[in-house]
Length: 337
Ligand code: ATP
Ligand code: LTN
Image (cartoon, rainbow, N blue to C red; front, top):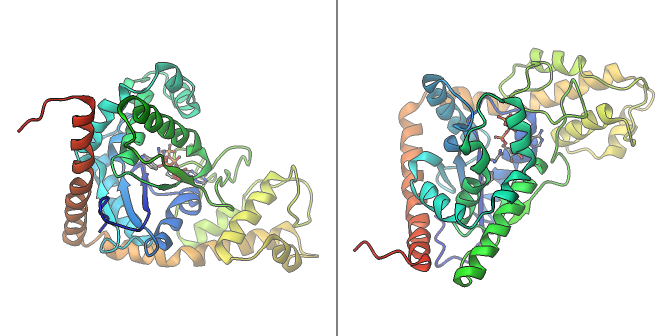
């Protein structure tokens, strides 16, 4: 279990919102990289339900989605014995640190966040303060554990940069304290694009169901979605500037099979896009099959899930509680006892 005081290993923190089944983008860009890090680092992974509340949700469905997201990270290879795996709202220190950090964050810097601009344009009827201060809570998630590395997809780079700035500003104001975290972004697959519009990132909340692969989709559905994927008018399977659709499919195929672009080009030389799309669909479906099987087993074992997230929250509170207590002293709050 990670202990910020006496460990040699670097600390990893990452989170994912329980906003529905994970997409292939979430998986390739973030979650599938979490498991392999567990042996080398002290890893802390969270289902960030408080972040998900920035968009209106049906409470019954939201509770179910949070449990499913927790089961999904385990199905994707997070071992709750090796890592701290917990639900964000179970650890009140995130909200406490959020407030302190908000007081070291400028209105102007939050206004520049592209995710805020996109999401407020998408939900003009609910541009709530939580949506605006979302990145401060993300900084609190990360800094509460003195995290060294944060595995994320490319779209979260700006938020991570802000977390670094907040940490540095706090350190300047109150004396060196927070570790300034580094992003950990995969070289291949950091931004998986929509299958229907390869200029847009694949997103859980896309209205077009053919635009994204959900990691629990069955084999037929996966193959059908890839067959319908938008590609350019050419026919050669080759990674090239401007061929966003085929480049995206090659990236996905490479992540599912471990093959390089040169190997993929050789494999499909003389064959058309149709053959390639079918091969991508089959490779992805086979790659995801174990996740689907693990999930089916885990989601029916509510007692086990509860045991895991309860003990995860206990461990998370122990680590972050020490950090937040020190922060309270640093800013000058009177000791409570
Ligand atoms: P929503 O559509 O609900 O806003 P999302 O699909 O963008 O959600 P998040 O929960 O915000 O997913 O992201 C979880 C992780 O997945 C983050 O590290 C994020 O960078 C990564 N991620 C999300 N979409 C992609 C993508 N298309 N390609 C690569 N990584 C991605
Ligand atoms: N904002 C992230 C989710 C998230 C996160 C974090 C990721 C919340 N807190 C801390 C890494 C570290 C997103 O994917 N939208």
